[in-house]
Length: 438
Image (cartoon, rainbow, N blue to C red; front, side):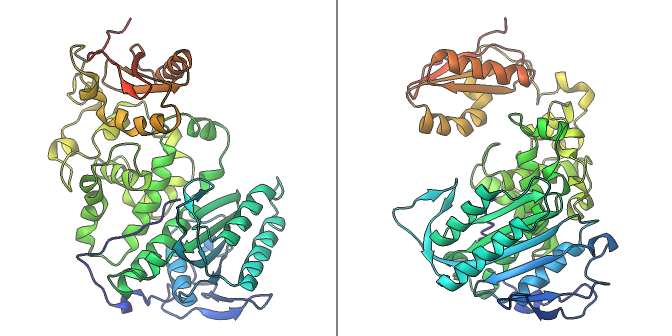
């Protein structure tokens, strides 16, 4: 999961704003872990969470970082208290890492190697804790030894982990590395606290999302291309975490939307940033209530796939209009859309086949061309634009492979149109205009 690194140029806050304590106003009780290697801070069981259903589940923080454990526990308790219910125990491991190792090398996806700051003893303690957590999880499928070993390797190499793993329904693991740039934010100590608070509460929200381990139809739809799951899961975590930051509430929409416009983001870019903006539009249009995000109930029963069908007129509209105006949504986007008239609405035009594909599919092409160039630059890129203006594509080392992949996603998403060759060997070869559907 991506870290939340917030650039603070306008807001500065007193450190006192973070001293929230337990939800009832009391201070957490400090105790030592069973193996004597770390401290645990817990609120009274009768007041730890707003819902009695949360009292049966723990958040254990193993803090190998230089950041105060008490503050981390306060933030964890505060986040937990917002949940309508919880169904899992959570282990959180935090540790510091130093400078990025150059040349930059990624491991297990987008995670980077850093200077190792933990001592050999701290690394061994952490690895033993992770191993015990996996082996004693009680998950029906047993311990995932492959994942467990990957995490251990990451600790040895100073990997900047920022991940939540669902071991099973009632066991969640979070591993977070605090890089030097986060711990030494030039905007001062308040900025450091805000960065780390947002980071921790973002990852905790993933551990609060009940339905990440759901199987059946939820999993089937989640695994389809262009499903709602990735952006909604990440967007929900970002929305929740940023809502809890000590910013003036009047500035919240600006906080969510500003990076969209400043970075000219398109669907397919950073899913947490884009997803939060889409969720904001869904709230503004009355599709969901903000409370469903803030108490986690939006992620209890796979609403992202089973309730909000990506092929519905309303969701098509939302996914096409989440970034219309600078730092705000236009009145037309908020008020004037009638889903029953989608086929005649200007947001879903009947395609003029004299239109250049780039004019209709600029965002889609831009979001996927980079991946094509990185992995199939000597191959083919096919694209299709439907009669409603929606786009799909396919790439492959051979023309047949690229065409078949494009056709697969065209049919999967009910796009009426024909896949045509758009790029070959990294060059655009489209003849400039769309082809009528056959």
